[in-house]
Structure formats: C-alpha cells, structure tokens
Amino acid sequence: MEYLEVFYYRHQNKETFKFSYLEQRIQKLTKENHFLYGYRKIHALISNAFSVGINKGARIMRKYGWNCIAKKKKFKKPGNPYEFF
Image (cartoon, rainbow, N blue to C red; front, side):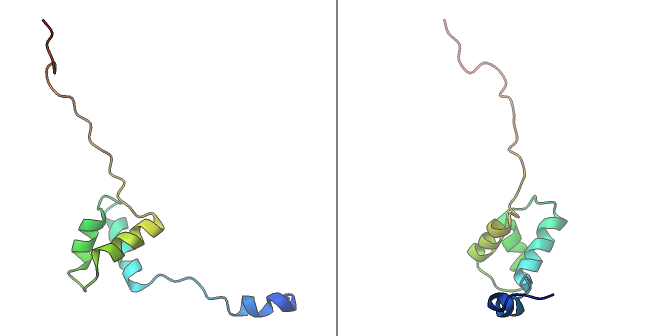
C-alpha cells in the first residue's frame, strides 16, 4: 500500500495499542464480576497481587468506562410519613 511521502513515516512509526498489565488485570476483574464492583473493591482485589494506588485504578476504570453499573435499589417506606389532623 502506497502512502504520500508526507504520511509515510507517520504511518510507519505508528504503534499498535496495547493495554498495560494493570489495565489488563482491571479489565479481567471487572468483566469476571459483570461490572458490579467499583474502584474500591477492584483496588482491594488488585492490591493482593501488587502495590498500586487507589486513584490509579479509579483513573483507569474511568478512562475505559469500566465503572460499576449496579442500579440504586428502590424501596418503599411502610406507612404514611405524616398525619394531618
């Protein structure tokens, strides 16, 4: 495939995208747990293997959209909250 001379070296030096080991580990844990764990739980699981800051894991999860997708539980409070006389 031929490229213009201006774009030849730009294309030649283009690196392929690869996840780092930490990103691969976070991705694996979030997919195994069906995106139910947040950054705190993921950090607890990762910190068993090696030392990493909690903000680093949160930043990676935010970057790739691997955040927790658990819905907020809805509940009804029994009874009337107020009684008017």
